[in-house]
Length: 240
Image: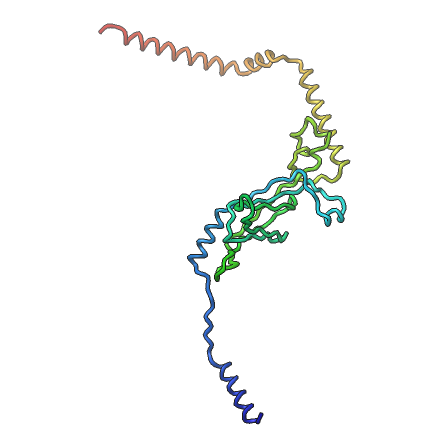
């Protein structure tokens, strides 16, 4: 190719580069996007504790884990118009028409005590595809495995025996020590109640003795009011 031809091609290429190119990009219709956002707003995220969680092979290789601290997350009012992705765990919720109730999508393997953020994205064939529709963060309660300990029988209302105790129990020895001390405290309280020198009637009489002034004033006031009412009634009955 001659040098002159090469120069023509080079100049033609520069000309195309310098010309303003008008590119028409597809834009998501705001009206359609608002409809999708409204549709996603009807969805509700719920969670439920898994009593008998079955660990995966990978989890079994990691060693002992608190497998009782696992939850499933359910998204109700699901639609094929959107998908849901959890930010940290990479769990993806998708509409499944083969389910008996495809509008209810459930996934497990969520660890209690952690927060999870769910993002709703448009799942359409137009320019709105993968547009963010909404986001919601939930925090799962932490399951207290010590709540099943035999020492908690009869004292389930004690904070360290609470199934959803939000704190951290350092060790089993720490737990046993605290529970035993709590039981000793309860025993001392019971003994003090049983050995109380006053009966119930003694306590009532003692209360009357302390508050007798208010009692007398109330009785006197009530008696005066009754007398005035009786006089008023008797006057009404007198012939004119």
